[in-house]
Length: 176
Image (cartoon, rainbow, N blue to C red; front, side):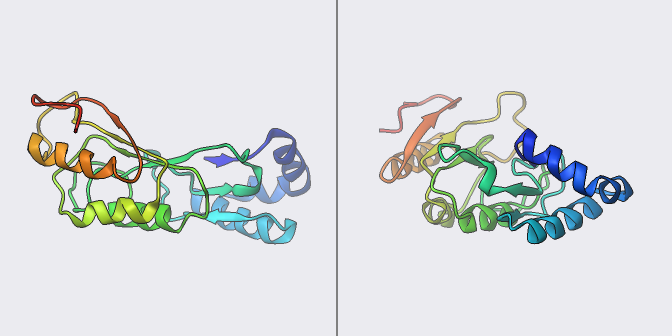
């Protein structure tokens, strides 16, 4: 996915259409748009490692084209490496969001997976304006933290960001 305003995309397609048509893979397209971005003087956020359809961030985004009040977000369920999805590794998503030069960022900790407390440090370093936390609604096959640990995370998150509480299994779901 490439986030770009229609009128700008029309100009790019008009100017580079033949080159775009030659791209046979997403990797080729990413390379081409990096080249176009340099030529056209566009700021490019290159997240080319994030080439799976489930990636919450586009492989390449033109930051100049997002309205200033846009919120850019990503799902980061844990700091641990669990083989439970086709999404890019959590470490890569964390680094991409931490290094993203954008004032309004959102993190979805959904479905929450068991984590180490360094995860809280990750979230602080990303500096999100909001974090959404919730358990998986569809199956219990994921390695989830216990409710007490989740509520403690929510309480700590509330010290530095807004928290949206989604599905929490039992206990006081307010995180207070």
